[in-house]
Length: 181
Image (cartoon, rainbow, N blue to C red; front, side, top):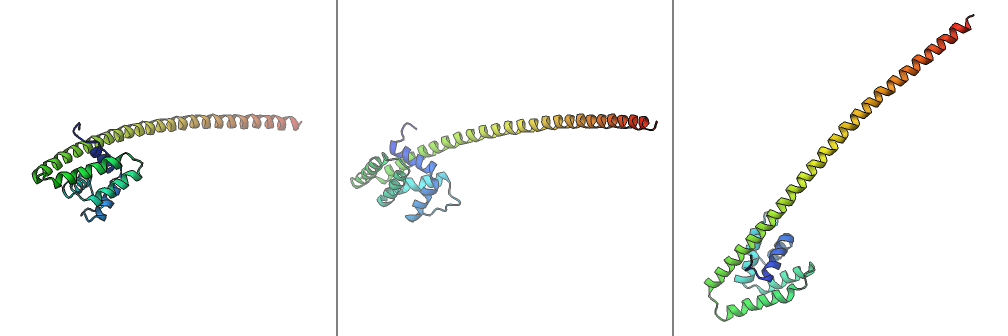
């Protein structure tokens, strides 16, 4: 990961954070990828191919604008410099083999970065699942406790009402016995 340039890191972060936007830009420039079936490795490979092999300057500008719109202003100069550098190195005779090796290296680093981010997301999801399980268990125990308390109160209330009824019945009986005289 130390060999990843700042520009590549920004591109990787953008692809990870906004893969749908990257797919739409790829589709606008004629790259064959479907939004419903796209995966991060496919998106990354197509973006790097467009930038470093095809040297698609218009695609680079569109990607740069998308990154800027997400609030990352420092990417403009860096991405433009990278694109110009790629074009100049291509013009001055960089071999296709070197380009392919560089692309493979960048793709491998990008895949490593994506794998790291996906692992972090998986850990976060597992932690959140564990948290939600604990909360659900707590709520179930709380409900059981409330159920037991309400049942006990209901029994106590019935005993109280029954006692009150028996007491009133005794008083009424004493009244009736006393009123016959």
